[in-house]
Image (cartoon, rainbow, N blue to C red; front, side, top):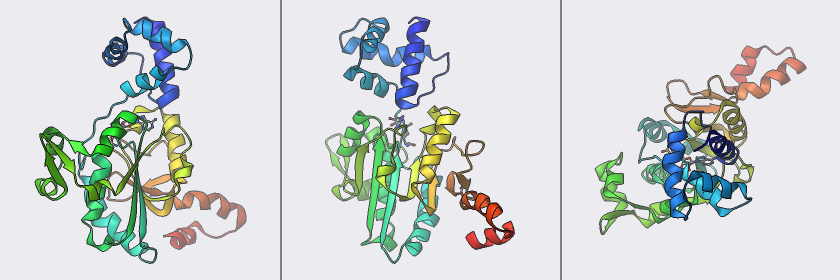
Length: 292
Ligand SMILES: C[S@@+](CC[C@H](N)C(=O)[O-])C[C@H]1O[C@@H](n2cnc3c(N)ncnc32)[C@H](O)[C@@H]1O
């Protein structure tokens, strides 16, 4: 691949998916795109780039999808799901008792292990029985969404992170595969969505899982997405990020939950600070008490 071809692909991928490739990732691009080029009858990357430069082509989405990393597994990192079960769902069960409904968004849901881990957690939380719980799972890639919708997983996939009692309780063996039971599958709606584009039409959520995707984006892209996510989360809602992700140094739209690693809440003080100083002499201590 020539340096010019690499620059073309780097720029296109950043614009289309947010993927921020450093200048030394040619091997990664080649390992993902040479097989794709051959599959569609092209001789290699120079031909592929020439075709992409020729104008809008369905191949563009295939290239973008081929460059996404879809690594995921059930109950990944465990801790966010412990928090979900032990503190987030109990708090929301109390706070939403009058309306008996919850909305949860799993952004960048890949092949479904994450939204289905959330669905199993909700299903097993007795206080939410009979509630309307919407779980919206979104991803850029149509291919992973298709696999997620089928809810079919290999032996290897169910062995990664899924406790055996949940396998027995929520899955049925289909030949060599395991299928999630229909009740859990029905709890999750899968939709295609690019986080770079407007997502305000999804409405507001009580919980947002946005894990292990922002890590591929540059700081400005992350900051912009955090800003837009903060507008989609209820004031007492929870944002869960991946183990290697944080808002620190990127945005003040969210604050970490003390002692709940990986969980963040909307920063209520952020909106108030300007208003308070412009408007009144009210001490910040009193504002903090009022919003606690
Ligand atoms: C590494 S997986 C993480 C899956 C899951 N959240 C987890 O933590 O196990 C990253 C996912 O982000 C998706 N993705 C990448 N860029 C995206 C974008 N701009 N908008 C939405 N999803 C994107 C990929 O298709 C992939 O499925």
